[in-house]
Image (cartoon, rainbow, N blue to C red; front, side, top):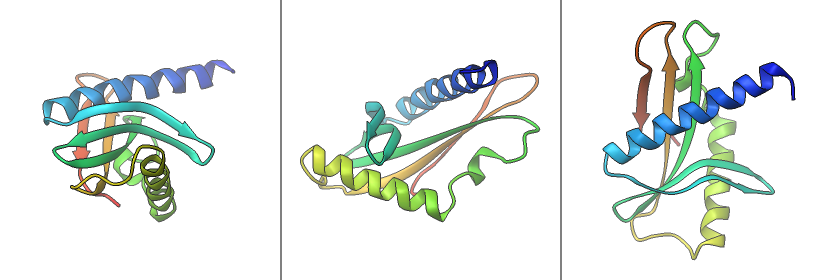
Length: 123
């Protein structure tokens, strides 16, 4: 992997750490990170009360082309729904509270603290 790829991975891991902290502060319990299957990866799987939360994390540096919250388009949303179904099939079916897909966007400004935005039910 080249230096840019390593930097992107580090940026993504940092964003996921911030996302986990933000979710925990909101009373959401993380039960898995970077869950993979043949169809793809779920960044964070969590429980919010009796609901299962599939959470996509997008981290961007300020000034980049796309704001992190613009990153979940219909195709990505459909893939997240399919991954959620696969998780449920592998882990005993849907919980009483159903399934929700959330997005945590992390924006890293050139100076100052990161801006973390959690949006529930994006897809």
